[in-house]
Structure formats: structure tokens, C-alpha cells
Image (cartoon, rainbow, N blue to C red; front, top):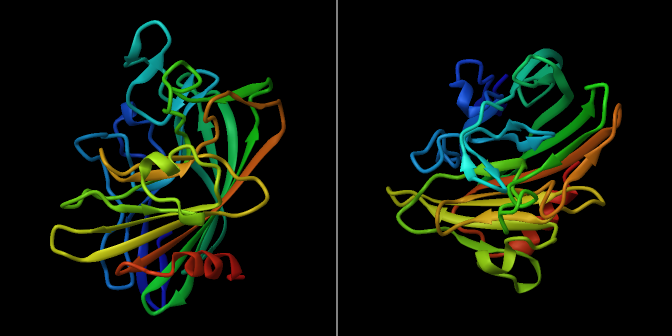
Length: 279
């Protein structure tokens, strides 16, 4: 289920079934590459082994971790718990070289299904230097009871409201430059900002420049979880500072488009507009 444009693979899809259970096994994309072939995702880096390219990762679904690694607790801080869930591929609904839609089952450690997800991934051409990944995820609570989504922030760790669609970019010789709308720049300005898009511009150790522009699509805009100095990673946060209720048999939908480009783009607002204008 790789994604290709004009016969060239731009994102490799992995089902995650061979992962260590402590990583909360799940499907993800890696490597994701620019049109020139520069890899802009990271897999199991030394700083966070549970960072798996690009995918959907949530640290707390009513106590089950679909993020991997340690769990932040109010009384003991970050500890390793026996609470790791798993996302399993159930069936494919639609598939072509440039898109696919699949049903996934999110199960707790005891095997109970908590969430059934329908995830659609599309590769869209933009220009000779940039393509766009379009992602739509619909999460349905199938547990038979009410659920809620949390994060380390909702458990008492300020600023750690991560969880949802998450992109882990590779380390480079220096932190990527971070830009958002209305002249916002830097991690301090954009971490927690409720703005529709942000961009990271980095370089590889070999000197290849890349740009990622992540754009939330739709009326609902979540705050951004952003890291650039410690490591490069970003994604809209479902539970930034309070738990997100997901009542029984209801759905939660999010959509994100990511422009994956070579070089450092100067007109980022223009790029953001072009991303939203794609069909």
C-alpha cells in the first residue's frame, strides 16, 4: 500500500505488525521522500524509539497507550506501564497507486476493540519540487462505553499535549526553521498555537534542503504540538490541555495535508493556499 506519483514511490506504508509491543504497534509511513528523493521522516530514533515516521498516535485512550514508550502519571511521572495498545489492519476499502483507504482496529492490551478507524491516504501532485500528502482519519468508539482521549498534559505535565496525527522528521546538522501564519516564527510562538498551518524547513547532513508544511483542513483547528530544538516533530494535538470525550458509538474526524518539498520555500503563505486549493 505504498503511495506513488508518476511511477515513483513517495511514501512507504508499513503495517507495524513486527514492532516491539512497547512501541504500541501501528501502521505508519516511512520513508516519506521529497520529489528529489530526500527522506523527511524518521523511524525509531535514539531519542524516542516510539516515533514512527508519520501516522496516528495517541498516548491515552481511557488509559491505553497508542503512542508507545512511557506514560506520564500524576504521582510517579513518566513510567513504563503494561498499557500498550495496538492498531491492526482489518481490511482495505479502496486502493490505487496514489491512494488507499483502510479500516483499522485499535485494541487494548486485553484484545478488546476500543476504536474502529477508517484512514484515507492520498498523494497529490503540486509542482515539480513538491507533492502533498492528504490524510483523513475517522475514529469510531466501538468499545460499548464512553471513552476519552488524554495526553501527558492532561495528566499534569504542562506543554506535553501531544497525540493525534504526528510527523517525526529526521535530525539534521541544525534545528529546522519553523514558520506559521501572520509572521509567527519559532517553537516558542507556535507550540500550542491554534493556527491552521505551520512549516518546518531543514537540511540533511549531506546538505539537501527540505520543507514540510502541515495544514489542518476543515473548520476545526487543534493546537499544534511542536518540537524543533530537541528534535523535529509536529502534529495537531487532540488533548492539548483537557481530555477529549468520545462518547459510545460516536465518531471523531480529523484531516491534515502535508506539503513535502525540496529546498526552502520562501512564499509559505502561498504554499499553504495552494495546499488547500487542491481537489
